[in-house]
Image (cartoon, rainbow, N blue to C red; front, side, top):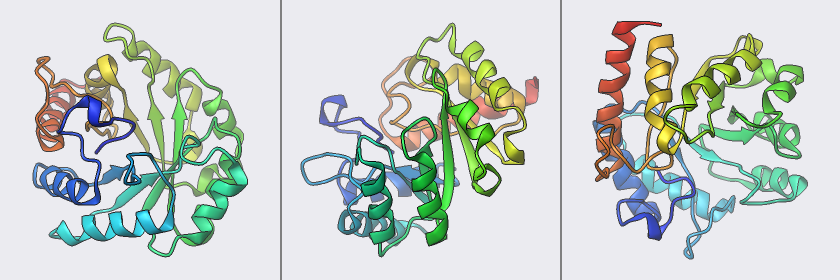
Length: 240
């Protein structure tokens, strides 16, 4: 829904619980089957605060017509100290359905273990350009994660697909877990199309790109979801 985007990226980026709830409702109506949001403090900072998380989840779930999984981030930028990050997870009263853990970050397995203890699904965020894939393939927690987020950080439209294929090769069998492949900025649409051709799950939202496939600014997450479904289905028909 938002990621690291802020007010400078335009009014379409949802930052408050109410705006996130509106954005989620629109995205689900457009065909989204899962949700990833970054809860924010009133000053706009990513946070793992149990109070902010509870308010955000309550607002979003109240707008959903049917149960749709809602996930959040546990990125180190929200809480740099790994032990403090795990303590935050243990302090949550309202629980998301899943949470992403970036496997290249210090303390990733500590945070993932805390989530698993709470019954929260773990999305193992494995970024290109890091040692995340190597760490994940060695991790004893690998078989226990909900899925792998293969996150292509290469923003180049002409190079992101190659970066994605290299990342997937590095993940190998990925402990047999489902893989969700996605890109960002200039690489968002090429990687989404590759996911379609490979039959992999994907995602798209304002965290990933502010632009539609034709280069026009997206007016909402829902518009990106609609365009993403069309692009994925077309690519899927063409096959790998």
